Length: 346
Image (cartoon, rainbow, N blue to C red; front, side, top):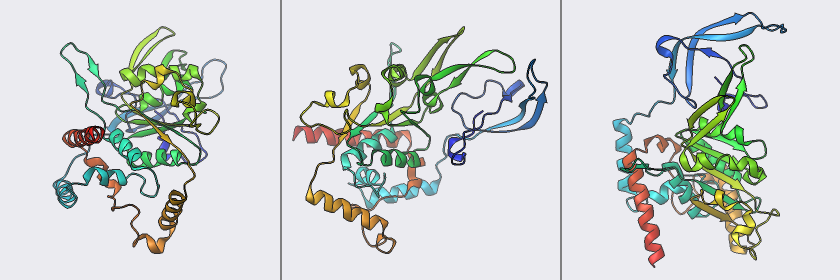
């Protein structure tokens, strides 16, 4: 087991402890689950040539922490009141609730909202599987709030894992085969995408990864699983997660004289796996700069925050994130598809 990244003190690495499961506790959990283990710690004699004792926790009880959220009657009443009050504005209201302090184009927030809601997985009659996870690539100039958007999504998403392209490798994102120090055997260690199964992964500085490391996530993004065939281990791990990546273009700034493909500088095999590629430009514009500065001043001023509306409409609290059921996802995604198709026709 690995310590949760959210609870790790700043400047410290996540601690790892070996847990022994016996009898009915075996095979009840998978990689990426959040667990609370109650047990006893035991020490074992060190191996030959070592002076350190090996410690292991003997589990007596294991509680699954990431169970499905239960919807109460009061939650349903609150959602109905919200829909009745903002009947024609529900989707945009939820989009404005994502990082309301950031002055970002509303289309980008709409795309991130679709990523948070997720699509609909479909299994055809011939057992062909169509993924429901949405992948988004944010690419643009520096200081356009790409990293802040990723941090805001981490606070809103029920289950998300954050990593950076500069400090991540291919096996760190998927899975690695390691050697047990006490027994000498080989075992698998889940990477970020496997740990975020049924959740989402936020990758900052995506352009800093090498091409070899980026190739390893192709299967995870398209098929939702990771295949491992190393050191006599043949396994398939689930990695059904959405990917929100932020990157800078080649040269640091986006060159509008070049095509998006030349600015991004990534292989087509990887770009084809992203459903949306949002380009964020820092174009000199007097009115836009004034609006951006006013928005920043209003969001920081405690005395005017209660009187100034950060957007054209108010935003809802983050606590509503746990109320998105499958039926609500279907309706919101269908509404966004219908709105987009109408705009294309016009």
